[in-house]
Length: 363
Image (cartoon, rainbow, N blue to C red; front, side, top):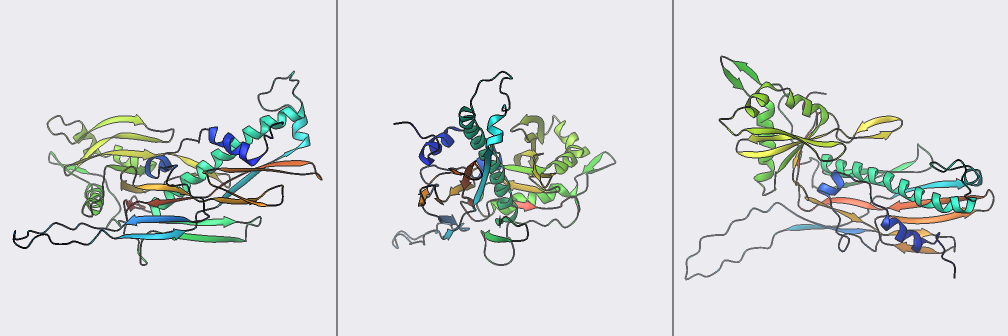
């Protein structure tokens, strides 16, 4: 029996063999456990702990143990995003030489169709990865996200909002009292700019609630601001006091570490994001200018809901996975189309595991 490479089960295995495009925010802050975080249902269950910093009491020996309540947590059933894109393949495209193909190639249209299948799946998966990266960033910036689901018309859409806090105000937002200014030097003494105390306050917002604060993530313009601050350069060059060090490291193609700095006893690396994605023909930064995030790796998790789709047999089929493919065709006109769907949702493991400041350099 001939193998049908266009069957969904075959393409599912093929998609799993395609390496996912490397992402920073998704992989570092919202890793996915394939055994626990990929659901076989359209909705996903989300558990995240509330702020609990209870202590143990002193007890007289004759009294015995004092019962304490169990840590509180919230459980919600949420609808993940629905990301669905496709690529058509026409007869004209199959009859022409493909990208990278030899000028004297003897490939038939049928052979080219097989090549296009894998190439299209890889391209569609990479596009979804970039959308996941945007979703991960927005979840951190807003402590939730608004997922705009489009139709084939620009003016018809539906916004699905998810937020991970109660009430109208986001408790993970830090608002600086003033626009950040550089440090000043007078009479042989440096006076740190207001940015230093603001970052220290952002760190305390996390640590006082038992949240780890192990790194600072800033937009490209904020990274330039810090590296042009005279006090920063003076302290990093001070051998008498370990205030930090300049040790540039490239973490990904668009995130690098400029060094570590001492924030009132807490030494944190400063990571700078220069990454952009294309939207309507323009390059948009993943982190908006003037943004600062204090957090730690693995503070969230990436969940995936199941995908239900109607296939060529006229029946609905449901699949669990990060990427779910489908291939369909029409006779008139003669067109094949490869589709890839993903239903991600990125959630914090505990409430408010990050602190965010926006427009610190002014609007």
